[in-house]
Image (cartoon, rainbow, N blue to C red; front, side, top):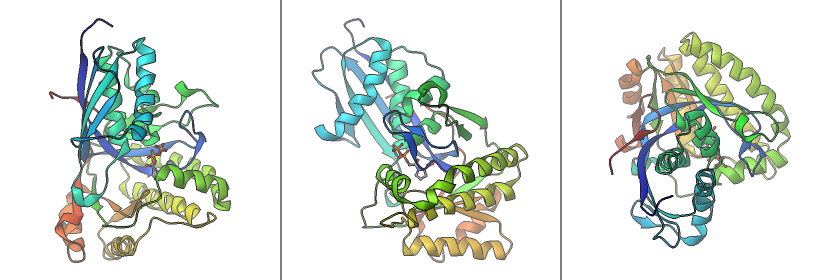
Length: 330
Ligand code: 2P0
């Protein structure tokens, strides 16, 4: 690399899985036990700039203007190393990153963070990787981040054995139809069990986990057909069932744990009630207490109004399908 600064800046959006990723077969390479499928959302994103310079003596990262501690930097530097090795460069970097996530949501997302950082590394180091190859690098920052390398509905292939290049993501549909997601932010003081630790604990101790890969395989096949047919009802039913099966594996772990909180259950009951009343919507939950309500964008206003009776305005965030990473001016 010549003796000058190389830099790039990207915006990447978070994604919510409709068929969940829960468990790694190879933790070093972030290779998942199963394939998964997600929807990228417009409402939550990270903007990141990276600058490489021979003048820097070490890697630094400022997240929301606050410098990251040295111990937290190790994983980031290891991630950037993947790109440095590919490009044959050694220069240290400075990273600035801003998370655009409503504060109340508590949805700070490693998915948008690593997708933005990986995209910026790819451009700053002149690697010109296509999205498929980039997803295999981004995956090694955080598994779910590999899905944020595309917009719309995204399929993450589990891949074969320990072959990193076989576990990539692709967009299967741009989701440019009547789809929306209401994020119900359940505030919590409780420090969550990280998803990384939670999934490992589940893989190791939950007797229900043995059934999980077969369930995902069935659900994924049906989900792909439903998306192809733009069959919202089937999509919603499968998403909700898949999410609850994932949470059931956690309840059966030893010791048992759950991300559900009181307001999470309230939100799920509300979805069921709305469905009984003829307003079609479905819930999904991830490694935290927030509930995401999959709905038709055209029903969003009605659904939000029903939730507004029980939740405060800043707890209800409307989202639409979002795009893949975009280069930005910094
Ligand atoms: C998902 N989750 O598919 C699932 C559902 C949470 C529950 O992907 O260890 O932060 O960095 O690969 O990607 C969250 O897991 O875990 C996640 P790592 P990640 O969205």
